[in-house]
Amino acid sequence: VNDADRLRYSRHLLLNEFGEEAQQRLLASRVLVVGAGGLGSASLLYLASAGVGSITVADGDSVDITNLQRQVIHTEASIGQPKAQSAIAAMRKLNSQGHFVAVNGRLSGVALDRAVAEHDLTVDCSDNFATRYAVNAACVAHRRPLVSGAAIRFDGQIAVFDHHRDSASPCYHCLFPADLEHEEERCAVMGVFAPLVGVVGTIQAQEVLKVLSGVGTPLTGRLLMVNALSARMSEVRVLRDPQCPVCVRPVHSQPAEVVN
Ligand SMILES: [Zn+2]
Image 1 (spheres, rainbow, N blue to C red):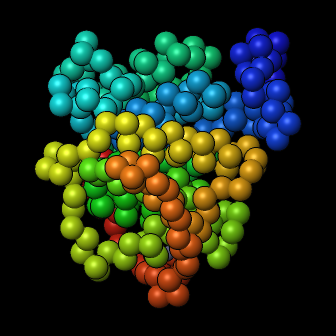
Image 2 (cartoon, helix red, strand yellow):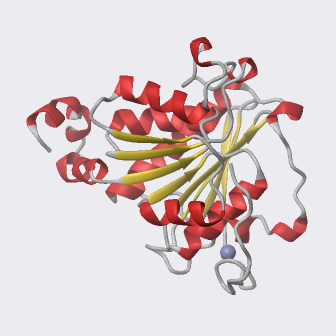
């Protein structure tokens, strides 16, 4: 941590539980964020401001007027631009010292696998199950922590899966087995309350900073649920599924699905 960083991150360094060593770990960290929509908007701004040194943003969509109600990293001026590129531009304005890379396309297959392996941690800010399963499989395969989030209507969820630190950790697939054929709930159809994606994305960023710095107790093996209508949060323990095809009995012949 140099003098400029010491000033910039002084409010972190003042924290007894955090301090210079934790900040140094953030500055040296590489994070992959899949999705630059509502969850990604909040997550990315805090990851960039808090000093995560290297952030790669992947998103295949372009900014649309209907995104601006909640995707606060984008502006009217960025309508039509790739979301990843628009997000990176905002992050650079916030913190010119960070190394930020935009992937303007859907990461899938080998590219997804390589991207997960090249980063210390992956944040899933996507909006569909195909992406979530593919990202989870890559994180399990490379023993990389995954910070997962979702929000629809007034309900949000956050969980951390970390096989690197805890070999008995469940994975996303343990929590939501694919064969249950979860009904895909999309914001475009169901709607989503604007500040909720900020709450969920911000808690994701909080967990990322904790996992990377080794500070506090992350949401590993727990699912945190937020309901915006009642302003209540609750949590349930998540156990590993002893039959999980992803983290217990991997089938290596399954290629990763197309992801966002
Ligand atoms: Zn599993």
